[in-house]
Image 1: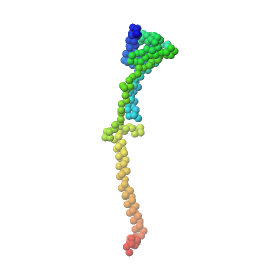
Image 2: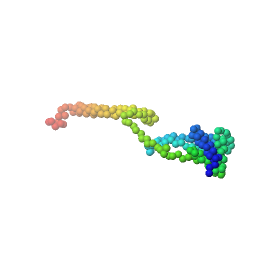
Image 3: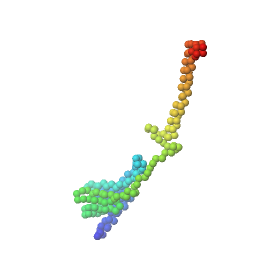
Image 4: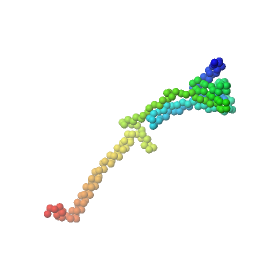
Length: 195
């Protein structure tokens, strides 16, 4: 049967959890410090999802020379007595402190239901007509500027075909002029077979 002292002790331990969740840390003199650390959300590129942010409770044991005093000094002393007597002290909603005969105090955080931290599907959507910034090398530009840049290059290449036509026509006229200069018009009719 649970004694009145254990019920009172459990109520005092509940003060630790309440203060911890309000301040995100709790310093227990002679035992250690509990801190709430937030791990930010991460984008999982391979699975195309965003993993939920996680919160972890870390425990930093204090040194044996720590004799500081704060609002939790009496609760810490009660916690030490419970650990030496039972070896384990549970704090509702937070976790449990445990100590074996030879080792230091350890903290075992309470398990959080994984259903609260499910990943969210996240697929990139790029609209072809919408302007958005892109990174090309080390220069940031927009998709519209890059489209214009590549369109100008192909337009200048297509407009140069007529230059080759003029060069080939000039070479043909020069060859005919040279032939006429060498052999004249009279010899031209005999080669063509008009005799």
